[in-house]
Length: 114
Length: 112
Image (cartoon, rainbow over all chains, first blue to last red; front, side):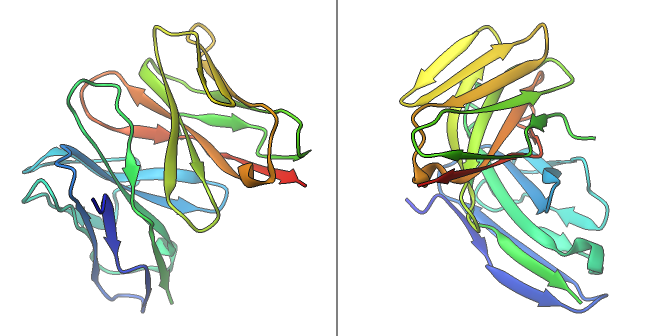
């Protein structure tokens, strides 16, 4: 199994450009989340989803959109990139069955906005 | 602000020594989890402790949880150079949301 796959691994954007970070999981997990990681800040939750068709905001949702049309995919859209969105982005998934479950992470997307 | 606060932010020890990292949180939880992150990589799950558990072991890892103090600790015994990484606690709150809220992490360096 591939687990959680993120693409691209690296991306450079100009201020104002838009793009979509892709995340796919092949474990049939209900829960998926997006985090950003900045130096000294740990991981901060951007958006999350408890199943197809259901999304909600996390701690730092501004400037990002998500959708969950299938169980497998959870893309993160940057609407108009800003330098403050320079960060490393991680996607994670968990099964919702049984509670008390671990999260599986992708390898991350390193985004630079110039 | 984030749910978990970790202490210390950085820790440097010699191989063979024990490493202890602490995590404090603010709200009620279903469980608390610890993750490891090697430089430039994604996070990997280490251990999960439920809110009704006080201590859990996995190999060289020992985790404690004190829900009255809203705190947890991760002990790595007999550390190795390969344990060099960042370690994060994450809380899984009440309610069936699947959200994990992470602390800021502890960077551990184990010198050979």
